[in-house]
Length: 402
Image (tube, rainbow, N blue to C red; front, side, top):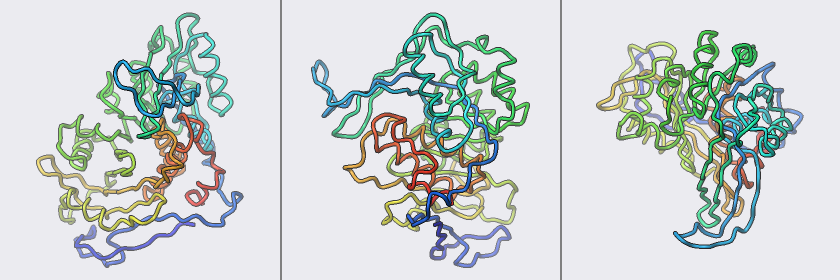
């Protein structure tokens, strides 16, 4: 069941420059578990296809009581071997939610590569566009999961030989893009990704970029992005703006094609700035830092389920940066009981997989952000990036989909 609750008044103007009624100044989205049956979940968007290009790997996940000191010798308390990689994880998530997922990447013709393809196929991810090298090694990652702090440390070994744009024929690229609803890049294979992005842009297919950190080719790919999902530190690092809200405004100003940008903040939830489709000339400028503080005070901190509060469309001002017309959203993360939190590996990929679904389903941000946070929360309850990824029929997702 979805419940929209209004909050106390704030001194914001409407798009016509008139004070808004108290009931319309802020909206909040709240989710409550209900007796809704799984049968009530609507079907996924018809023929929605997400094409992803990027990382794939085998993850070797070792759980330890606490992260070792230099020169320590310790024992793992558990070991799990599972497919990983940002793009592969996000597309697995999208496939379990009901989208048709296609992946462009590269593996070697070794046991690890074969295992990865089998795992993706079993989850319904189309692997027919993956390049399989006759020689070399598939990518793999050692992941140390600290049971004490619930953090993970990753040591990645790239595949060899690396993927080059010439590995993907033009006919394969055209086939992969055929009827695609959205294209997703994690910027791992930037040269190939840029080639695909140019063609997707020419075909007017929306593009989502995962801006986890500065990588080769990221700046070029961002110029094609309609949507960006960032890790916590990226906006400030990339823009050199001191505050996260100000950095999000800067990103929208620097990337004129961008419709929205989201920054994930771990257990603190996420922030999103959405560009308005039309200019609001009469609206007053609102300092985005002050607006964020107001949203925090309006947010219900008692609920354990993900929520979202948002501003009305206004002129969002960042000091020393500029002004963009749009809306600010504050999303919360699920409050997972300590005894249920197992591993945060791949939580960001799960969030992105859910955002891809939400875009294809036409979800409004007030619904999209809690939904993505819930999917990410589910993934943290099991070891590895994929074990805990929910299917769309999962009762925990029902209230977000009906």
